[in-house]
Image 1 (cartoon, one colour):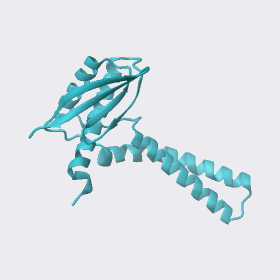
Image 2: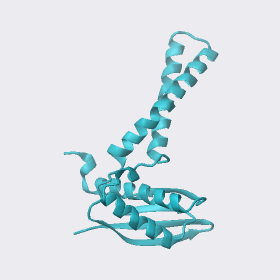
Image 3: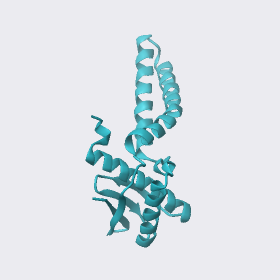
Image 4: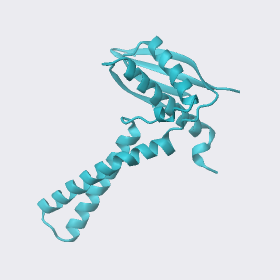
Length: 171
């Protein structure tokens, strides 16, 4: 049994793909649009930022159609939290490992810091393709056959606009 294909996890991965595709389309169409981000769950996804609800609906519908037609690359986004977490984990572990190894060799503080910075920099460079690969194979699923946008709700908390895009699957 593959954990990634279980119902709620599969749906969350699919919704994450639609979220990325929607954000990509919104940003391409509306230069200067200020989106703070998004978050997906098993029911749909949230978009945080000052976007018009009708424009969001158009982008979400098109994102679904394009993913269903096979444009799987829309599911991958360079600013995804998966990439940020991957970079943070890899750089932190690399710096910790380099610092520990330098300390074991009884290097001075400056040498340990230099080794940690060098290791973290190398890990940051390596993390980009790792993060994209994790998106492609773990955190998103571009196979969204049978999904539709069920509804979009808008909430405003002060100046912050939050939309929830509910996704339904065909029976």
